[in-house]
Image 1 (cartoon, rainbow, N blue to C red):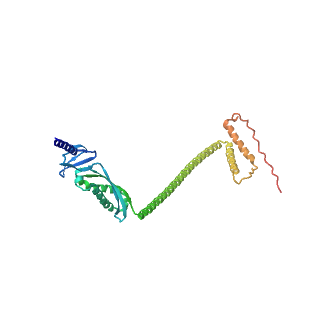
Image 2: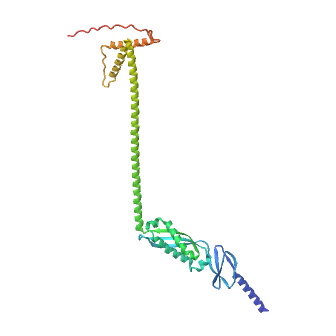
Image 3: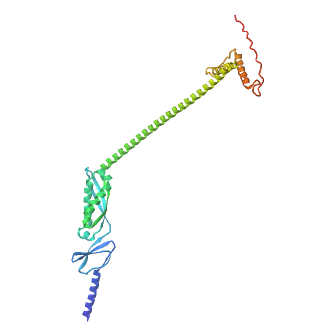
Length: 328
């Protein structure tokens, strides 16, 4: 009876152990391969699964999430024989767990070495200037090459990034001097362009000023000519009126004309810059008589009584001859 009890207990313990061995829980982001007698049979996705104990076993536990690998710093010789140091980073994701588990021995190490060799190949085919200025092209070429190489491994390379490219110190100093010279050159060009533009604007302003001054002189000359024309017309009209008056026998018109010219000449004499003292001639009464003649013309124009409010005409006094004593 005791032996039967021990056997039952052993059977129960063995059953519990087999149940635990057959139950497999796969976490999210992972996939397990199942091997039967060492041969791959199926794939366990995230969740609860049952396998045949003793016969089946879990082979490889593959991480299906995107993984990041740092590419260590290494020396690269460029196309123009410049020694640079570069490092990078690569992002990949396992898309086929059986291939990733059974097509390569060490997946991470294989991807790392493949990236390092292709990094030297791609960067070594470029000049130093291209290497420093075309990182996007380097990343794209590395991504294309590495993704094609790791495709049989069931891996998808999503990104490859170059982190640092460090040229030697002497090349860095030479590049700094070159950059400084280039910037000074551009500054000198900009300064020269500024002076040139200023001179052009100054010349344009002077040209515009000359044009405006010429237009002003032209307008002034036109207005002066028009004024002289009107003055000549007025003079012609006055002359014609005097001539008609003379033709009608009016002697006072001659006095008016002569008095007008006399007064104008006196005005020009008085306005002379060198004129300090003006001596009137002895025949001033002749001028007064001419002015009186102008009054006669005005009275004849307004009538015998003269304009309204005017005083009655004064009687003309006859000019008395002046006696000049003879000198010895």
